[in-house]
Image (cartoon, rainbow, N blue to C red; front, top):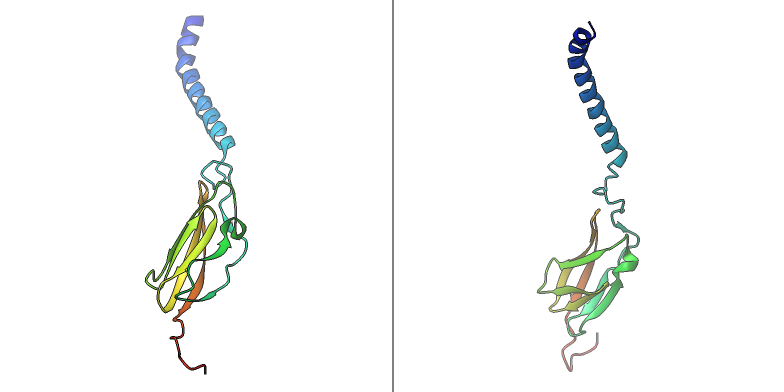
Length: 140
C-alpha cells in the first residue's frame, strides 16, 4: 500500500519540486536587479555645466577651452570630441582637457561626449573663427 501511494505521489512531487526550483531561480535573479546601468551599479555620466561659446581668430593657435571632468560627472569617464566643420576648427582632448585649434574663418559646433559602462552624455558649444586683420589694414 505504501509503495502504491509513493508511486502515485512521486510525479506530483517532481512537478512541485521543479516549480519550486523555478521560483527560487526567478527570485534569485530578481534580487540581483536591473539598475538600468548594465548591472554595474555605476551611474551614467551627466552634464553638470555648459561650455561657453567661443570666438577666436584663425591665427590664434590652440586654445584650452574646458576641463571635461568639471563639465561632466560620473565614474570612469572617457571623453570624445568632434567638430561639425574641422576645416574651420578642430577639437581634441588631452586627458580631460578639451582643446580647439582654429583653422579658417567660419562657424562650427563642437560636441563633447563623456562615456562610461553605464551610458553617455553629450554637450556642445559654438565656435566662431574670424580671420585676422591684414597687415597695414586701416582700423575702422
